[in-house]
Image (cartoon, rainbow, N blue to C red):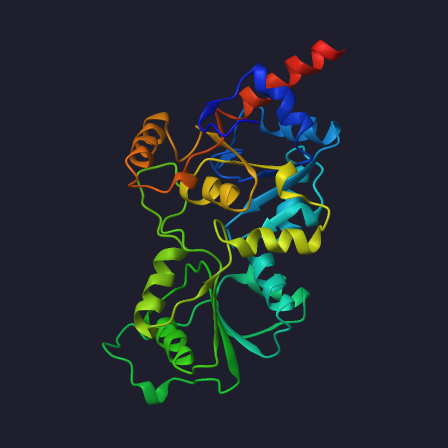
Length: 317
């Protein structure tokens, strides 16, 4: 393939897409569905690729999902997924701790999914999951009333709908100990939404902990390397040059794919419009934006990708 970028994927390219790639990595929200609606052609595409012998992974920064729960849901909507196909940041966190032979106790700002994935690998979350309420009549927190755990040697920041001032105090205080490890599932500042509400993401929570502690975390999710490194550790036969990343966000999915040596394919069904892509392309040409934000290929949506594959298959039938 050429070194060109932002190529509009059509029937000319589909042959090489299928012949040159064994592994397809999909972002989820904005690509396969816009919650709660499954996008047209999404399940059919997944089944088609599996029938063609392609390996399919679901690569998401969403730490609310567990491998087991996500795969069960995919089975219910028509795709027979195995838990190991789910590359979620709760699982990535456990795999990262395993890879560095971590021993100790974690303070985790997050949801129950973090307990499940870390627990499956034998890691112990001492505190942080669920509500940690402050009395409604309180206008200040006396620090001598806070119970700190002397055994904490890792702080994990993940998405948490129960985040509050007390949790930030605890996280920042633990991080004042220089030997305490600091991990974050991702730094997405917002989460996907389908209405007018702005939903702050894990990056918003993380920013407050970073500001209070003065510490910088190791961030595990897209577009960082640990996401793909965990896939390679679990599946050594996955080759970057024979893998394709399908996503809707330039700053996470496409940047991740390009930096990890994958082919990148942008769909316009989610966070990135054609107008936004044109704006970023112009910025890259002026050297004011990272060229790795630009996808190798782009297409309207996964339904159009499915149609190209089906047309190709009819030609060979």
